[in-house]
Length: 213
Image 1 (cartoon, one colour):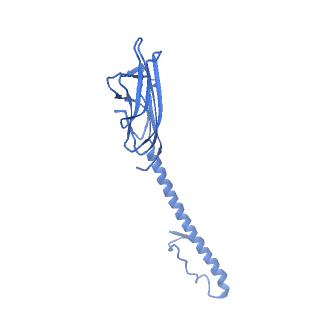
Image 2: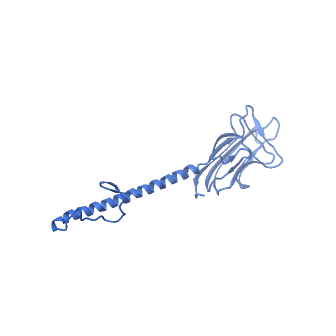
Image 3: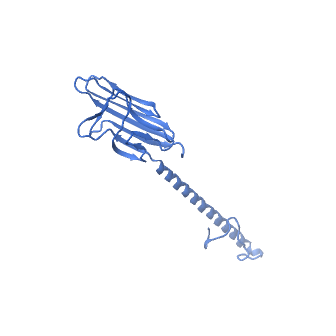
């Protein structure tokens, strides 16, 4: 649909309407013909501009929908117990399953396995904080590892401190592909603890996507 000065019309783009009804063939009609030609050019430019605006609007809507679909963020804590409850120690490394969910935008964090699966390729930010409290006279080890597809991306460790409390925090920016898995693993012989104060947490979010996969 194209637009003329008298309203919408279904004229073929680029075709200049006949000037005969408007202008006669006499010398005195030259000014009229030139004016009509200029009006026709303006109409064509206007129609072209409208189409360009429509295209840009559609592209903006597509990009906005993609940005909304790309949102991925989670923040979880080990538990929400009224009293301090610990996880570990174990004889082998073990995935930490953070049970208390603050946010899981995109549902990419699995609260049954403790694994975050990247929904699309991009750069992601992750942070882990761990805390433990040793019983009186007991050796203490608060240690974990941020792992991507089984490979360590960031270590956390505080062992046998002078006091009974140990804590550690790690932050990492990681480039992932769609389907890559990220997990916080408790290392052999270590433990972490938590309660309603949420000392032990795991957080991650997409900084920006690198493709539309």
